[in-house]
Length: 200
Image (tube, rainbow, N blue to C red; front, side, top):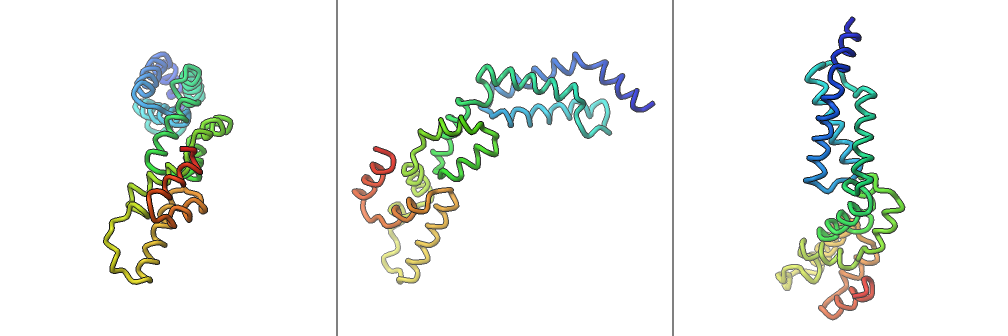
């Protein structure tokens, strides 16, 4: 009895739900640059909210809903409004501006379910040295540290270096790059570092 009641309630609202889902999908992709995974998660969340208005006991989406979500995601993916190379390129720019290293960026791409072929293509534009320098500037590390350590003991200076090393490694940067950067003592060395690793 209860199962039939649920089915009748749902079947009466299929067209209304489809219109609701289309509005939500259009709203989301028109305001955000999203991966396919983010769009799926968003539409699933909104669909559950819609469903619970009519049956609070349901925990999982009916097959009809998951099929409609797949159709909407496929539509916006084909249009280039969700996922794909455009999303990955924009995401890479954002993460580089925040100073993240390659390991962190790959982890982010994998979490967002970015296709491996797209990752390989987009990451050709990654600038490891520039990204590391950006992070160092934000965190005031190495050459960009506050010049207040002239009275430091050798032990204190070593501890500061170890802390800077951990910060850069935690941001996903390569061990050798971090080591090279922390050995620098002047801007000329920094310019050589950028030229060697980024070609600029």
